[in-house]
Image 1 (cartoon, rainbow, N blue to C red):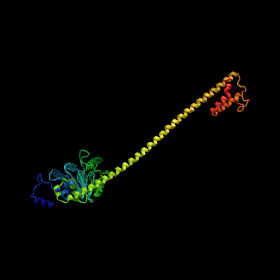
Image 2: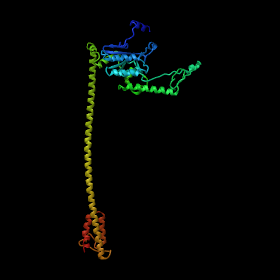
Image 3: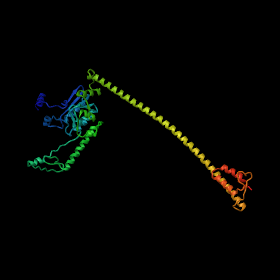
Image 4: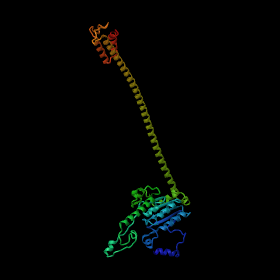
Length: 407
């Protein structure tokens, strides 16, 4: 407080005039640096400023907007060391960062704390960097309500609160919360948390849900969960801002060492691109080889399939031919049997008896005995037919039966 008083007197006891540069803003080689230190509160009182080093969210917003409006500032660097702060004013600060980032690159950096409301604000920057030992995250919302009714009862103090509306006296000192009041607090916190999560993910950072449960991470862990990139120190974060955005501080870099860093960075990027290109070419070559092998296998399978189809068609044709031949033979057999039966019936009808006379065919003395009856001849003929010997049966008929039936 004494130092602040001396500074005020050194300025001639003059209050800051409208349009004067924000005390939170400084310029380093064309980069506007906005310092965000301590708890972020909306219009903190003198005790919060002195005891807790609180920073007014309105002053932070003024500094960011000034950096965005000034022509001599080509980029904005948020130098953060804050545990967070109140919800009031934080979404608006984040929206201001997002708006300025559309016109000028905004980077956020911390070598200490970048938690809760401070991370909400930083999440709208184009890039977030932290040192390995920094603490990053605490994506969540909290509200503490002190219930001191037991302590007051022990002292013999009873508090009575008269209000209209079941939520009006919510959290009044000396009174406990009702279930409805607890539900309302939970609902409000859930709504704010949802808005916080949406803002954190709005710029496409793939932060898993398990990393947004109110915990903080070291710089190394934050990089693993995509909350921030890790750098060795503040100078490295500033160098990256200059390297990745060449319009920043061009005049200063022409005559200074960063041009060498820029060349080294460019060479590293070229090497990386070459390696990625070679890897992609290898993958394409492997894919082409696999496709060729598969096409060859497909051609072989197609040829085998055509061969099997040809064999199937040939077998079907042979089966059809054999079926036709069998049908023809069966028809011949039926016709032959019909003729034999017809002749037998005609002989029986002409002789008037079913016992045929003994007949000895001429010229068949050796193969057929002289006393062979017509019935025996017919029985022998039937056996040949039954044994599927049509040619022998035909010869037997012509030799031994045909002359008898034509008499």
